[in-house]
Image 1 (tube, one colour):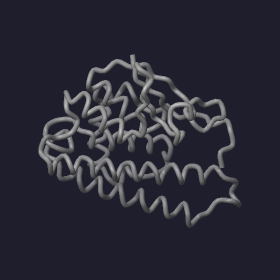
Image 2 (cartoon, one colour):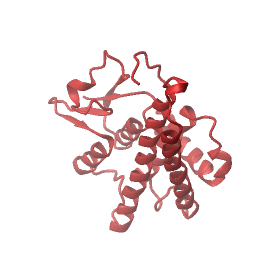
Image 3 (spheres, one colour):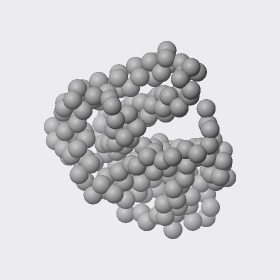
Image 4 (cartoon, one colour):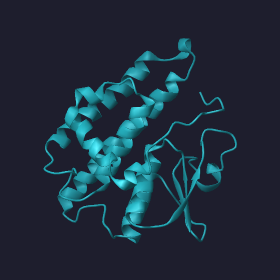
Length: 213
């Protein structure tokens, strides 16, 4: 059985967990805090980032977007990418925006962990501008959808990426007012969160013991 090394709040890992479940691939979940000194992550990914998918033969597949690409190539059914090329490219574009917002939020999160006098307000503001721009774009896309899912009548990586980001954002930046600012985006997200494999993977915060900034 494969092993997925994951951090419980990680939106990157959550995409992969949902994809594995949707494809009916059994795996063991190994939860870690990649920032702590005791982490085993460097043994499996030279970039020391999660998630990491460890196969039966010990081969490691890492970085969420690449793991999803790998899964689609190796286990194409049920497909999480549309067959239409334009829809396929759009799904990847949505993932790029969501991953970009995740990256910005990670930077802002750790900046906020610094002592108040050492925090850079311009740097935090720059990251939040990326998030605000991404939220506006997601809202625009969601308002144009015709059904439950963002693209067509089936679940795609676009839905996984949006739900993973918003679920993580809701616990890490709970004071943000995006749910009242973008009610249709909120409604769409809540619809996804009601699906079985989304319910099973809802994020929870972790405590970071070591000083990382």
